[in-house]
Amino acid sequence: MAASDEHIAGAAIGAGVRAFYDEHPYPPPVTDLTGYARTWDDRRRRVEAHLLWPGEPYRDDRTILIAGCGTSQAAKHALRWPRARVTGIDFSQSSIDATAKLKRKHSIHNLELQQLSIELVGELGRSFDHIVCTGVLHHLPDPATGLRALADALQPDGALQLMLYAPYGRTGIYMLQDYCRRLGIGTGVADLRDLAESLNALPPDHPLVPLLGKVPDFRTPAGLADALLNPQDRAYSVPQVFELLRSADLEFARWANQAPYLPTCGAMVRSPHRPRIMRLPAEERYAALELFRGSMIRHSLVAYRRDRKRDRQVVFEGESWLDYVPIRLPRTIMVEERLPPNAAAVLINQGHTFTDIYFPIEAPQREIFERIDGVKAIGDIATNEAERQTARILFEQLWHYDQVVFDTSALRAARARRSSRGM
Image 1 (cartoon, one colour):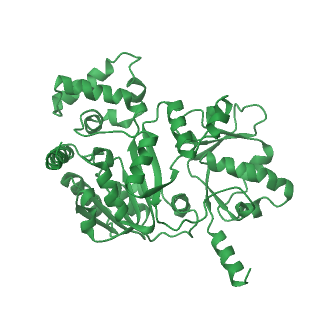
Image 2: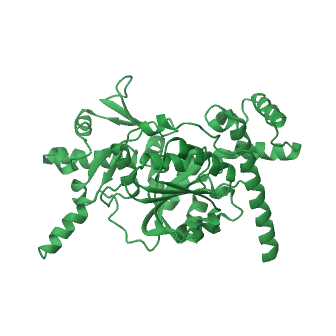
Image 3: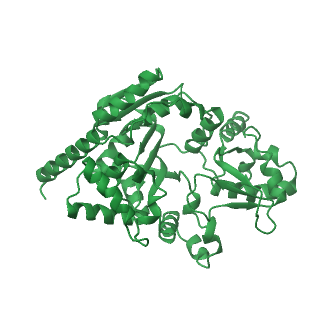
């Protein structure tokens, strides 16, 4: 296809997607965010900040771009980061209008909105500390061009949060999308009603059935249309995710929830294949775990600019880890009933969707875990050599299982002190 033909085809796809979201704003608009705002406090903000920037001191006044903000995402970010400056862009006027209503209702003064395509984000003439783009790129005619535009708008030390559809867990969705195309099913009220009823008649072993009770998209007409009737939708396997990042000169930092991708967590720990997987490079390990699990429906990750001056990453070699300040994730719960043998408790991150991702801890580990207060460094939590031997293994596992994030910014201060003393 000639370049001009590709441009025309891309423009037609973009226009179709825009018309789709103008008619079916997604997620379905909400009228009140009072309850949402109350769920955020400084502890929860610190967790998110150090997930993105473990090596930097906590800040709550960053510039944030919500790229493809939908009907409420930008308003939510502005409420949970009241000292930040938040910009929301979306190519759908319906989505911008829905967000503007929330802005007025809640008197959100730190939010700016603009109808703008992601590919044209450079027209803002600004760069941002934090860019959020979740569930959007895979609907663009050219996702690589959109991601490149976002990378260009990212500050040198900024962080990009990205979510892309994953292919294997969405097999049933893509089968039904093809089904709908073949039958000419549209987005009118009657068609959506009939489609919802038809889903209830699916054979119980259809690949879509496991998602029907789990994914909220199938419970509303707008969600149903977005899932099965979207005019543009593609998914990315792990290798394709890394290829897309490299095309935009971005570097992978971590998965938002990393445990499902690690052979050190969950069912893979007991697999005889674990030693083989551990010998693979990191990207190959992630790809293998995606295939092993088979039902991932999305990939959520953090990425940096490739030319970013990297802070020391979270590692447990040497003794630097003793200066890490652990902060518990707010969605962690401790289960104390029906425990595995020798366990004093089981830690579960409620954000995980795989039932094998749980972390049993024994009594000495539990004692150390309960000392975490978000202020003390590991070296102050584990105060003698025996506890530190337990703590090193424990905190690396807590990190892998998404039970904690770390504030490692003290390492920078320690290096500065050593430098000032000529050490």
